[in-house]
Length: 590
Image 1 (cartoon, rainbow, N blue to C red):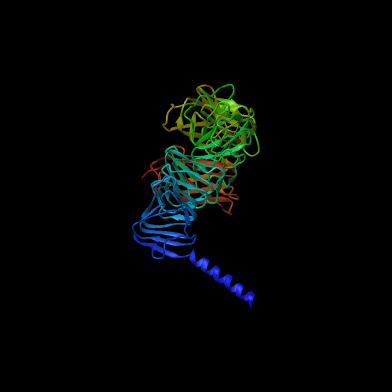
Image 2 (cartoon, helix red, strand yellow):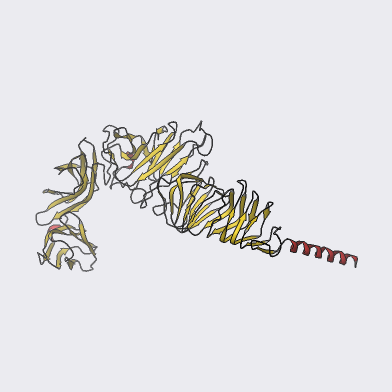
């Protein structure tokens, strides 16, 4: 009986203790409905007037629906306040509002003096800070603009983007999320006038990180950075900075591109010493990618024989002592990394890196590997001061589809069955410092001979159309253009194949000619056991129509091409199969 009485007494005491510190009370500007809040689980509402704290305290919840809460130099801890109207103020700069739960902000509290600390903050609507805040946990942006206005300097946890969002500040303020993982999960991120410092980057959806008004993404000085699912549809289309650390010589991949292709820059510091100050924000290397031809076009003739006209990287660093091994990637047979695409048959062993120094591009010794990487053979490549980098070649035998002097928009070789000739045609969108073109011919892809020269029609941004007729082709013919710059440097186009096997016996009828709305094609004596390609080429050398036909009956084909949508002019109809290519002129006259 005595033991049961003791147990009952203890239970009663516990119940009274809990009820005494868990109550709901409201302040109307004059009195509290259920006494002044004093416990860690109290449910507090302020509807009017001003209530001033007299001690540090924790509330179970806080709702402001009018009136004012004055922190009064104290610290208030609350999981996630609800702010319908009213305000939180302080008469002292040592006041603190600690939001200990995950706060989904429809309205972020503001205090006139003091500090607001969030454990986790989710911003779901447009927000602009007016006072200093601190985030000790995670920040989640969910389809909004979060303007920190310079009042947020650090994030203690990770950053997640669940819908297209903007992180904004003033004066390119730095937000330090050192050690954090930035996860793009449902929308892109725009860094507007802000530097965001992270450790790792993960894409779970296909979106980009972009920047405006001087904003950029930085990686902290951690030893290793993890990049997850970075590719052509998920990368940073903005400047990327890396902070260095004493004795950290690990290779770093800058996850950059231009919003259409992923074109990383690879840097391995040779040695990092005497970083001053020796903290997270000492020396740095930063990279910006441009997926277009550089405006600087002069090549060094001795160390560099060709350079890519597709892309270049702008690299800078904070100190001349930051040197190391530089690496770039290229597109080799459809790997789809970067914009530099090698022509068929190119020897990747001849690839080197090209760096713009003072007045011209020079070659930096390099070696290519099977991962479509090129890295400098020297470990003392300078990234200071600002320099440009691209992919180059140390021999005239390596071809880029587009080289620095010329931007091609079309290159083709078409057989003429009536007189057994081949017309080589090409067009350029721009030409700068271009001298002439040589038409190169080979029957075996190995031994090449120049069979003619066509001089440039003029440098500039106007389109130029060219052609050359090979009057003495072989049975098997390979053609490519050798593009010669004014300084003697050369580059090559891709290779076009024309076969004349059994092609003379093939006949093609094009009618009516001239054509208005439609043109009919009739082909006899052509091998139709494999697909046949029909193309319509306009006066500028552009393919405006293409059709692939598969027939089971060998030797005969009948089809038609709608021509009403094409401008009037003289076109070429080409029909290509395993036995060769035939071509005939077509006049479209509306």
